[in-house]
Length: 259
Length: 259
Image (cartoon, rainbow over all chains, first blue to last red; front, top):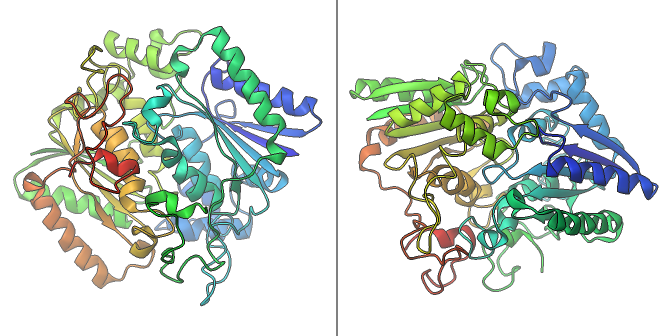
């Protein structure tokens, strides 16, 4: 595998830092190629602004259009072009981050906002009666897999089907489906550690073993079976799921998972 | 009302900028006090790091603990303390932002990550057999209301109950419930504009009228009826919703809305 690890934690000696280091050593020892985007160490610029698009930034900035123009003209900033190149190089992308306020840290959201430009990650492909662009299962990054490795402070019960925080699968859906599957990446079931604010050495040893097992079986792990957009499950152009495709009682985000 | 507007768009002449300006003029003309945190204009630092906690940052940074210590010691950075003070001053908070990759722009997520410190927004209140801290309906910011004003590029159908992007209420749940209701703020139903990538002057005029109507009726608008945590609906400490409280067929995030 060619694995890109995108890492988002300010403390190298944190649990997230340890899991990232373990991923590098485990994958390399197994003969895989690994590259790391350690966003804090890179002092990653988190905020989209006109400077991202160089001469393609219009006087009244239009984020989608201007980012697409800069992508096509090759005038995106060097940091963004380097990340796009890493994504094209990789066949597997691992995101290592703590769940902060039920989503990714701002520095990682800023990586998505800046790297996933128009014409690269969205605004790709033609629209017709049978296709609504290349997205959700198709797109620039098709053929790649991704894995979220997420540390969560609270206990697992709070993120269960009836837990007050909401089910973890639903909290991660906007990342799995909206960010990754949209430009064609197939997300694998996530690696989630709970109760990480109070982890003992013994618990860490168990977590590290489980993480190594996940890393060494990535190639044989089935992705989350999201429904591709342009293959008959959705009305076009309303992109509503056709009636009757889902198991009885399935609603919400879960509609977009097959079976 | 005392209204704080938190605004997150890089272009002052954008739709978001216009909606923010209209909110200021409409509310002030109606006799309300308004303060604005224009995050791009403030050059808001989006990224949590050790510099946020001054002398309270430990050698191995622990974000929750160190942010709580710095909050209690009064050594948080001036920019963060100013935002906490504005939140305590306000009775109503409006968030104006574009939906980027199914969530808020990184600069706004970074406002949450940095301003919502331990002991201010979480880690508040005692734990007992009947209470699990002050959160979800209680907390430092109880008594306040909030409104998300969100611009969405795609059409409304794609965000409907069966739409491919997922229902907009579910996409906003982690913000409404996880970020706002958690420290006690009551979120109002959001103001969402769709199809904003291709808005005509006529459509903008209609949208502006609808926005003025929402702004002038904020005080009589009922909040989203989320279930408070410590008043009998949840098992403690598992924080699972007790069986049988929800309408038949309700699952997922919707479990945490009454009625």
